[in-house]
Length: 355
Ligand SMILES: Nc1ncnc2c1ncn2[C@@H]1O[C@H](COP(=O)(O)OP(=O)(O)OP(=O)(O)O)[C@@H](O)[C@H]1O
Ligand SMILES: [Mg+2]
Image (cartoon, rainbow, N blue to C red):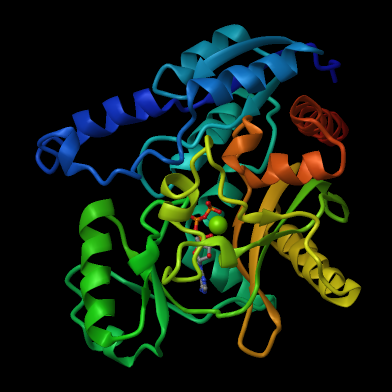
């Protein structure tokens, strides 16, 4: 297997995501004002693309490519030694799987999890079914579709949290996503289904401390980054204890950052060990590769449960943006460039060993 010299960085820019989405849904979106303001939170800014490119360029020859319809032809021509994949795709249940699947079809090596794993992890309910099968604790849940009627909602224990089934970066998760009455649950579920055009995930609200735990590597040899605690105490008075859209994108102003992340989190060694074991097992059963960030929260009995896993973790380069994985790496003395290069190295080694 060739040593990795030429890398294609494949991303999905906010601008392209917006163009593609608006052209596909002209019937529902009459103007930019009709779109929820967080619809494109997941997608890459020009700063992220250029920071990742700059990091990789320290050791490799790098070409950055938009992960749109042209990606197949561009990758086929370029034939890079490795694809560094940060592409979220545009729409659909398999949007995060598009680039890995193209790579698989072209026989290219790529960073991160395969299309199947990315598709499963994007669908939080599918993920939870697999976690539950393997006895990995997570929050009780149900999935609701527009038109289902409200019987299921009336029976769901409260308080609950309402989310789009397959989003990230807190898209569709707001301060009012935590609901304590059936009326609010019904109203919020209908609103989410309409705005984000997808099923709705309703989960029991876990009231305890919240953590996020990143790792690099491949099970069973995971290199855990320091644990981060989400500090709900700094949220504005009266806000629900949720690390949602307002906390990530409105109240946290890079000019005046909200100190939401405590790293390393002050926890008992036994709790840290437990969370690492849960995340390691989840990575194994879900076949997560190279890197990931898992979100966890304690239940009312103080026991940790997995909220979700992010096998394409957010990597905003500006430290003032509170991006969790780069923040955890910084806390152990790993700078942004080094973090990105580590992922490329781990993927290069894994894929060379695999062939
Ligand atoms: N079952 C739950 N109980 C309590 N709080 C929850 C629950 N699910 C989500 N939350 C809160 O909502 C936030 C966002 O939820 P979640 O991590 O599922 O969304 P996301 O958009 O995928 O996040 P990310 O930015 O990590 O991609 C969590 O960080 C947590 O504060
Ligand atoms: Mg999350």
